Length: 347
Ligand SMILES: [Zn+2]
Image (cartoon, rainbow, N blue to C red):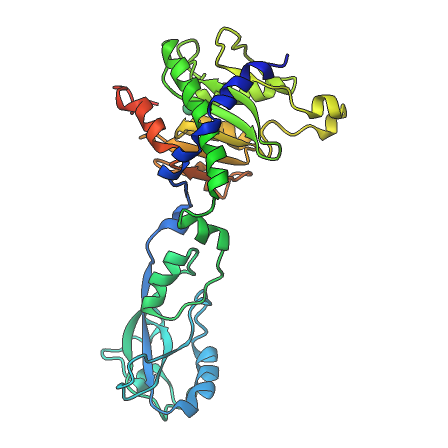
C-alpha cells in the first residue's frame, strides 16, 4: 500500500524552511580514538651540532633503536629558534628503551661501537605522541610536541569544521528533520514520548518511512524501531502494524514497479539516511547496525544515547557494520520537543 499521497503535503509545507538551516551545524560523531587527547610518551633526544653527521646518525640509530610502533614520528627535527647553538635534534629512543643507569648520558645511550657520537650534544628528555594522529586537531596538537606525519582524511577535516554539507544540502536535511519533529509531536499527542524518525533514500531524495515513538503500546516500539519496521514493510516484510497512527507511514520503493527482481532489493536500510530527533538508545543503535543503515543524523543528545553520549555503537570495530553519525541537525526544533518533557533523560 502506498501512502505517498499523505506524505506530499508535509514535504511541501517545509520547503520554505531553508533559512532555518543556517542556525545549526551538523558535527560528526567520531570514534574515541579520533576524539581523544594526544597521548604522549617520554623519549630521549640529542642535539645535532654538526649537520653533516645527520644521515649517518639516522641510519645507525634506526638499527640500534628502530622505534617500533612510532612510524608516525619523524626522527629529526629542526630547531625553530635561530639563536639555538645547534640546528637539529634527533630522537634517540623511548625512555622505556633506554639503558637503566642513574644518569643518562650520551655515553650510556649510544654505545660507541653502534653509533658515532661526534657532532652530538648531551641527551635531554622530550615528550612525543604515542599514536599516529587521526584528525587534523590531533595532528596540530601532536606536532607541537614533536614533528609527526599525518595521513589526512579530508572529509573528516571538513566535517569537523562543520562545513561538510552545503547550504542546499542543509536545507534538505532540515526539511527531513522537520518531518521527524512533526511525527514526534503527533506521537506526543497520542500519549507517547516525543521522538520522531524519518528514513530517507539519499539517491532519490525520497522519504521512505516516517515513524514516531509507540512504546505506550509496546515497550520496544521506540521511534527508530518503528521506522525500521515501516521500511521493512515497504519492502514486503515488517512485523508490526502501525495503521492506527496516521503519522507513521511508508512509501513503496520505486524498484517495486521498475524492477521486480528480488536480488535488486536493498537489504532493509542499506544506503539510507535516518533523521531522528533524539540520539538513539543502544537497542535502536543495534537495530540500525543490523539493518545496515548508511548514515544517521540526530538533533539532540540523550543521556542514554548510544551514538555519541554513552556509547559509540557506530564506531565499534568488532561489529560487522559501521556508519557515519552527525549530531546537531535542526537542533533548536529538536531540543524544543524535550524542553518541557520531564522525562527527557528516560529513553
Ligand atoms: Zn531506542
